Image (cartoon, rainbow over all chains, first blue to last red; front, side, top):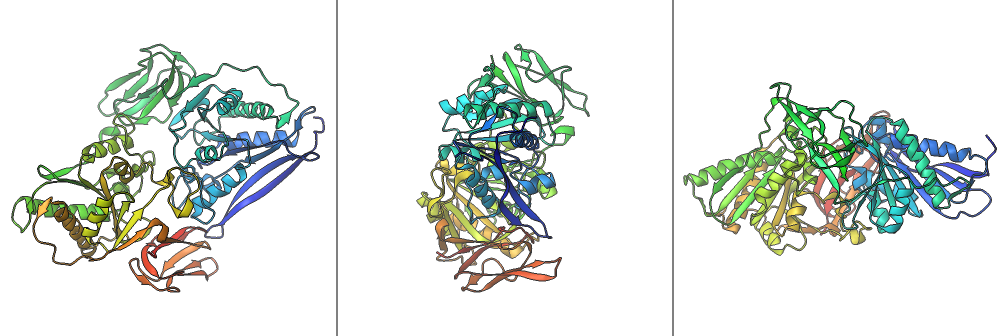
Length: 319
Length: 314
């Protein structure tokens, strides 16, 4: 590999909390800047707001390694912040939420530097991201669902264009008045920064292929933002456009164990009435078929076998 | 539920006609104080309905004592299977996940009430008996005053999640609560909080039960005499801006040296944080100003910046 154009790299602790029994929580930012010229623009990539989601950590690692050893021809023109692990204590304990207090970090934004532990952590994360032109927040799904690589974004021209440049399978947009309050994406939106929420795979796993796609998507986004130059923009791929009106939710009608149909894969096009699987009641032996009420492309599938009546089993984009 | 287990969530109704009062508790599975109060309320209402005491029912009272039976079984705050906070999924969704269905069922059952009460106990913090209402519900304030609990906390939210000016609360943490959604629907709603920890206490629950009796009298749901024990004639009214939050500066184990509900002068000791590895006291926490101790931490484990206490200085 050729020696890259000079990049200034700093692995910087930006926030720390002291924990009982001699432990410490540290938020680390990987900051990449051009060494010999002023930075054009800034972008922030963050992951791990939920401590049971690890794909984002792998994506951040791939991106950090790439920026450290830029291939010949590539140049860093702007600044990239990478927060590979935004909720370190939760991930080290394998928990989704901030331990002890048990609150969802991604409901505590914009946070408060003089507030509680979750609010301080949220404020520190927002402080890193607040000078960016764009921000990507990488999530895996929880341990119940498997997701086709997708990006969730607010319906705004710039945000939609950037979300599409990631080249993932689905762009799922929502209107400006349909925010989940307290998320980092909403807080950034209030600051005028488009945030793209990437969702891939399943919690507590590394989905390598999908993570690598997100990594390549991030390079495309950084090229589009002119933060990176020298690479070639790949031709736009056909991304499924999901919104508030065309997503079909399929919920289990009865409780039991969900067994997916053999060979069912995410991304499959399903005709109305096609089988998705069945819910079996192990004690009574009762079987209930689950099928799709409309034509559509499958982008979410349940992986946790236990279902209650009403549990989400699958989601499709109506075609 | 899967594996043949039934999920018993019951609602009891007493009396008929209007006005209607709804009382809910047990949304959080680690808060048993409210469930106990509901038990005593049901006993009280049964007596009133049987006309064997001095009270007569003139309206309807609905009681849902335990919304989160699975959580209560295993002492978990959230709905255990998917770790969902039931008090964050309102108004719910009748065709959705179990947590959403439960929320929807509760919400539909009580949304046409004249007044709703959600009783919470103590989780990580011990709470002095208090009523929380939302700013902008003047009738709820009057009703809360009539209840005679010693403290009323008037909660006030910002319009969106942008930086909270003047210490108003951001909605991220309350969007999805039962109380907030009832408030949004124009129902007078009060959150009662009381509890010192796990052991249930007859006398403490009497204080909350008496406050519910006063509320029922004020609403005209029942007729009869005021409870024997007088309530607070002039409860302290605090708004979010006047409540001081005290956070730990150092991590360790918190040892309280006072109890919630105490009157504090500036400098009064709340407790200390110890480092058991070194055998040292790493921080002593004192009241920064005078006021009333609304909440004090129960849970011993504190991180740096964990919430220790709320002090009403209004």
